Length: 310
View 1 (cartoon, rainbow, N blue to C red):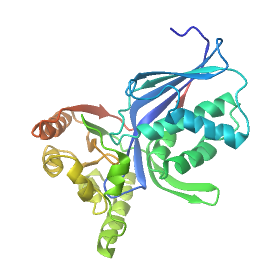
View 2: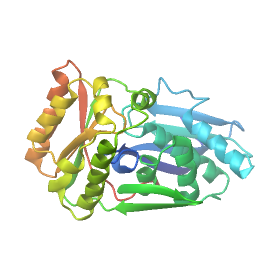
View 3: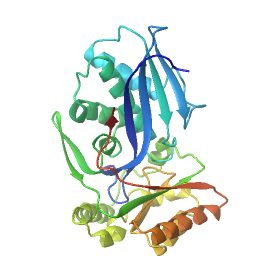
View 4: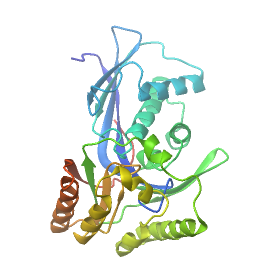
């Protein structure tokens, strides 16, 4: 039982990336949070970890993604803590399910070390920059930091250009989380190194429509705007009954249904209507059940704010 003084708490949201056509360029935040609490460590000068919830029996308490990110800030600022801390992690974002667990860990580590060293880095510039460099693509880390729906994070010299879209009213995110992992590395390696011009145009036109539809609250356009030829068809082999799940979920009333990130979770966007949400949730759950796969359904909001600090 921790008796040391708590210094600060960071809450980092889950995220869903790609949203079909917006491969590696569009993502949204979800109100499912990992919490990181920093305590003074009166008994040691080391940084020690306590891990609860998702991955508590799998994540190392000595060499983990949070600590790796922390060390990068120590290196960047050429400084190290002069006393000990306890980092208590309460994880609610499932691991390797396409909901941004690695991004949350990376961001959490950067925030922890930045706080310990006196908040010398700006979150929406320096922390975002470092997180993108570590993760390799911006579509998870950007909405986790910024909140809402983030489109087209582009680095220009030392600055980022992006559009943050306020989530449309009455829009719910329904996430189906199956009980199997899908490694991001495996899901990326299955993708072709080159695509045809036809497929590129297919995705570019729909990604443009996707951002416009979200901006203008034209949710009726989301079904066609989230169609994709770049990644989902290739990853379908890793997610049993995917095409049927897509079909049945749309039939149940969802505006759109896509693989969340690299998978294995599935994201449906639907009207905030109790009857529709119930039908969509049932369709998603039963589609996996037909392949003897259990899944957890979460009905979530898209928060306008990303990281919460208190």
